[in-house]
Length: 201
Image (cartoon, rainbow, N blue to C red):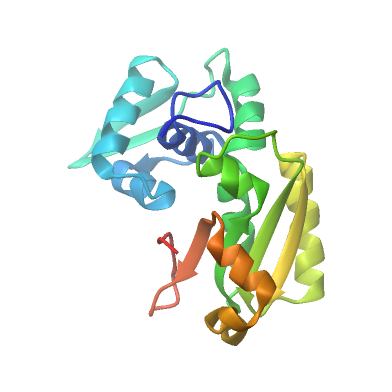
């Protein structure tokens, strides 16, 4: 899908791949790991990574049957691209990183204007990020997450907490019914083993 968040990347898939690599500059990832983190089809990840390696934006190497990739921090456009990616595709990896260590959080989504742009709806650039957390999250955790996310992303983050029961019975809650009816971006949902996974809503 063409990017609505920014004209500086060719597609949402490319933007997600760039965000995961630029915002974790010291990490090497397999193509399978990139596909899992971004919820992008493996064939698309392979195609986009190959294009970015050819352009010198990403670096790759082989380790057995795995192809490991990482961002090229020596690229002359690394710093400006990092800032663009933080402001556009950065909310997903940053918020996922902040929320997944909290075991009481079962699911987390971005909703509102940022989610709408990420899902292809035209409109002005979002002025804040709205996050819906399903599960247990203390007030102190909310403050810490919103503060760190704002410092890293340069945009205000607003967190709304709901219980798993309220999310399951959302037809009885006008706010949650409205949220579910509009675009959502999945941050993660815990699987049966308790590990966070990127899934469709």
